[in-house]
Amino acid sequence: MNDPGIKHIALLGSTGSIGKNVLEVVRQYPGRFRVVALAAAGRNLDLLRHQIEAFNPLVVAVADEHEAGALAQSLPAGWGDRVLAGATGVERAACLPEADTVVSAIVGAAGLLPTLAAIEAGKNIALANKETLVMAGELVMARVQRHKVRLLPIDSEHSAIFQALEAGRRQDVFKLILTASGGPFHDWTMERLAAATPAQALSHPNWKMGQKITIDSATLMNKGLEVIEAKWLFDMALDDIEVVVHPQSIVHSLVEFIDGSVVAQLGVPDMKIPITYALSYPERLRGSAGRLDLARCQDLRFMAPDPERFPALPLAYQAGRTGGTCPAILNAANEVAVAAFLRNAIRFPEITRVVADTMHRLPAAPILDLGSVLDADLAARMQAESIIASLTLQDDTRTTTEPAEPCRTFSNH
Ligand code: NAD
Ligand code: MG
Image 1 (cartoon, protein in one colour):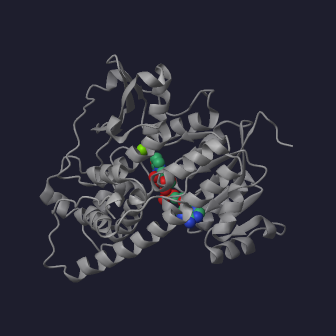
Image 2 (cartoon, helix red, strand yellow; image 1 turned 90 degrees about the vertical axis):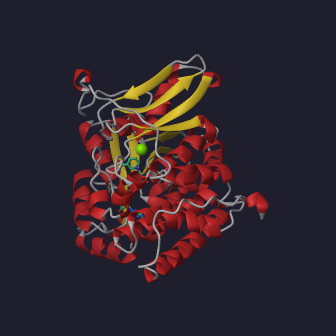
């Protein structure tokens, strides 16, 4: 029988940047949290083994079946049955009866199915995996309501909005303002952007995160995904969600009310703060993350994002407005394009170009069920791969600064 004073956590994506921060938070508050399941892709078994030793979960899931076997072999006798393998193993970990809270911190589309399974199993969700809401926000939010579970954001901007919204009534909200650091390239020219390398794109000035989200931060696609995430989390129209570039990452986001009051949430850029809040809500726990010294924040700047240099942001708005499977297409094409950039197959501006071309070529459809989302995801991945292959072939003749193509609306098809 679970002690009601302790949260029992299934942590999906335990070896990643968010996952490691979650475990630091758990370690920081003995007696508050118990990790009952860990899940990871299986690329870093040494770290996973350390986590198993330190947190002694009931089960561990490894998405890669081969690596799951290797892990089971290397653990002491008695562990064999507790290592779950493959995507179904990850879903079983997400639905473990002993867990009451699932931290969804897998990167990319792979986070969708286990998060949905956890919701259906009645678990409260602490959500880092924004792709879940980008791909299938409508389905996910409907299931959250149907199963009466709580979905709390870990993403720092959404945690900030969630907190700022408590300052007023919902009908008095005028707009949401998401801040974006602008990434390492916020002041780069088009010419410099065209030659940006993966190493440069991976050196984020304020946050240490996984590779995919770090590249998304450099293109501003991350902010585009977050606009769609905010639409679903807070039930807002996209036109009432604004983005402002704020390179210092101190103001994490803001809510403007109809009387002109703007309520912001500030703090040092440390993911342990929003993670702790998502896990302890509505309580606040005394934290060991750094404290904000306002007297030393003399240079807080805010500026409008530049759609010419960072076309991913308007493209994501476009996908969100089109709706249906269009955001899932955007998301899948982006995952493929980011991976291609990281292996030096395409240049930095071509990440967004591939996404725009994929959206242009694939008609969006209404989301009838989960199958329509997964079909769109698969089709977009194949389409994006073929665009990347043709770009690579035409390497000498391609242009890299063409504006993004608009997304086709599914109502036209
Ligand atoms: P990461 O790359 O550091 O870690 C990803 C984790 O997911 C790893 O543990 C990996 O093993 C696991 N994983 C990948 N594929 C899997 C699969 N098929 N099955 C099971 N596990 C799998 O990524 P991250 O930076 O920690 O980001 C995780 C999510 O949180 C992303 O959706 C990201 O957008 C979001 N997020 C991250 C941050 C941050 O500060 N890192 C902030 C806000 C939101
Ligand atoms: Mg964020």
